[in-house]
Length: 617
Image (cartoon, rainbow, N blue to C red):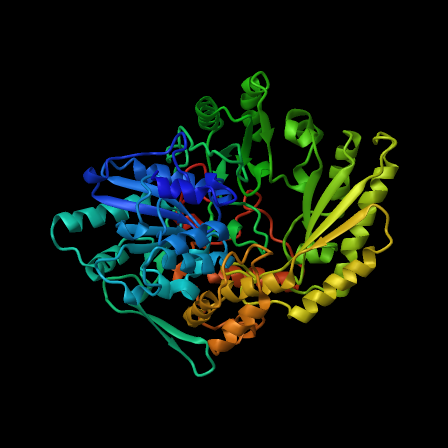
């Protein structure tokens, strides 16, 4: 690090965000590299360093002997100001080289409100924002992650999107690039055309989008006959043999998750009708307890972390959880390592788990009923009942717990004010359950915290056609719940900013025209929209007005059932017919059993997968 950079880092709040040089980082001789990839996380270092997907793809790309993948994070305000003042372009952590010098700049897109950070990072790198304005001298800009399943609002800024899981796809992309360069036939246009032929890669510029007069989409048309009409997501079929790191980069500063993240399986059997992740990661693919135990030991020996978090969408649905926890506890107890189960369902919370898992024994307990009445829980296919919650709370209270946190949503399809009132009633019943329990902790009052987020309709869910409640309705429901809990002892109420949720809904359901609004928001200074101190709803409304776009067209409008949706260009493996059936069942408050109880024909079985609940037929 040169003297000028050392001087700059003395002026920022957390210089450890930018120093690099961490134990476990991968360094290579750039003169020997045929392809250099800048892997960008469009948020702060502390959040990006905790992302398991980044760890996996960083490692799998660096297994290629002639590929060097380096990390890049969004600089915070203080560092960005120094970079702009001193003319320092956005740089990679490992080499400190400007990312404009790389062959590829890849962004993981975890959340719609990171889009303005993507534009800000491209600007800091000195790269043109629009893909159409970048030429053969510029890096290929790649997007991936959950938001890539509807890439349309940001399609104009990216050359290509990787759809689905990238452990096999991204190395294939770099091999094609290296091969075309070596053969002397590389141009950006030819590379993207060839890449579009590989399953799982969406090149927006190779598809024409036409619109009806009312602004809805008329069609997507490939520009060439040799590229697919729909892009099918990529999955890793055998998780036992898939890449998993044997060591981690160890940060110098505290991050969001300073622990071992042990990925147990991918997918979800449950089918909650509001949940996008449970669909786009189908089918379920599990690792064996033997493989997981070996991976946990390896990472513990290389990091020394004192906590292992079992990572999945719903850890209690892992088919061999008792054997896995027994294997891990056989050595983690002696090593004083905590096991963390962050995604337990209400209906699978047991005394046995409390006795086994140290992080369940300490601290409060969190459950997610999602809705206040049984009718609405059935409508969203949560498949839990009030007695499940009371039984779980009884177990927790008997073990000495006094604090329970309950997660809910408001604005769900078919919701009424009676459902909102049911949230307060359910919190009150949990409170009463504490005092009914003769084995509760004496001399200490309970605390029941209800945390309520605003429902955001997401692509590839049964509710993708449903327009979000208006901002006024969301706030009215928040105020009504506040009145319902006011004066009730031992109940705390937190709620999510409805204005933030509305902007999230706009971009979750948006089309390519929204690129105009993003450019305007960037011009007006928007960034870090997921942070309260940066988000400005007023500025966003100005950006939409400047772009001549109505946010209600995307967030609040009920989409037609026969309408071409912005994300119809993508095949996530689950059929639209399945979503339509689930939508109809939601309006009749009918539930669908989980995938292990009964196959409901979602279509994901066509993708196959080892140790899957949906094996290929």
